[in-house]
Image (tube, rainbow, N blue to C red; front, side, top):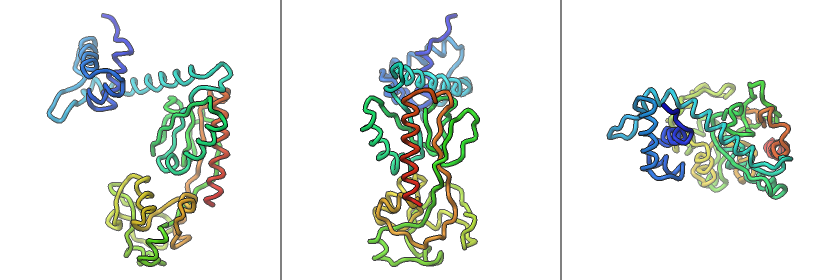
Amino acid sequence: MASPDWDLFQSLHAVLTAGSLSSAAKLRALTQPTIGRHIDELERRLGGPLFLRSPRGLQATDLAQALKPHLDDMYAAAQAAQRDASGAADGSSGVVRVTASEIVGVEVLPAILTRFREAHPEIDIEVTLSNRNEDLTRRDADIAVRMARPTQNTLVAKKIGSVGFGFYATSEYLERHGEPHTFEELEQHAVVGFDTRAPMTVEGLPTRRPVSREMFALRTDNDVAQIAAVKAGFGIGVVQHGIGRRAGLRQVMPGTLPFRLEMWVCMHENLRTSRRMRLMFDHLVAGLAEAVGDGN
């Protein structure tokens, strides 16, 4: 029996990623019947079902779930190969894929990447935003901006500095509702915070009350949505100092949030010889250092 080819496995990976045949067809720029035929052919060659059809849609079988991590690796490797092949011999053109948290990607990176594009128009940029760390050893991305010290020995990493946080609101909101000076007064305001994340206790706060979702007048686990609500004047929220200042927000209760997060730029050590990777790496280091310095 002939082994299934990569095209069939790509369709399986697309269905596992997208959750339906129609969404997988859009990912692969194919028709839904074509994706369906690929899945049927794979099931025939593998000798078992990959999905169970139910009123709630497709449910991956144990066989499909067992294949998924291997398909993830194969997909990441294929994407990395395409990016590597896109560059010229000297590596000064092609594609660089950058990953960062949602906040950094929306609030900090656009201006930095704009300056990079003006200086290096021959290099295309791909950006993936996620609050989980993408696997650089698997080449899910080429360069990462991380808010924690990297632990993998195969990475080239540069510490940018540390980022501080504070309570911020618009001047208009504070003029309407007054400015809190204690946590007891803060609880009387419209505070923006998380929704389903587990309650937490921040070390060093001058209050022993746990931080729970019931304290918030607007609840969302999306960090970008939280900052957008604060910028719109909804209420008071936790914002990085640099972002708050660049947005023209006013800090309240300064000095009450003691925690800081380190910022690092990382890439796999195998990429250090690529000119376009080094150009992006060094540009991010310089641009983020400026942004962190502004926040401090």
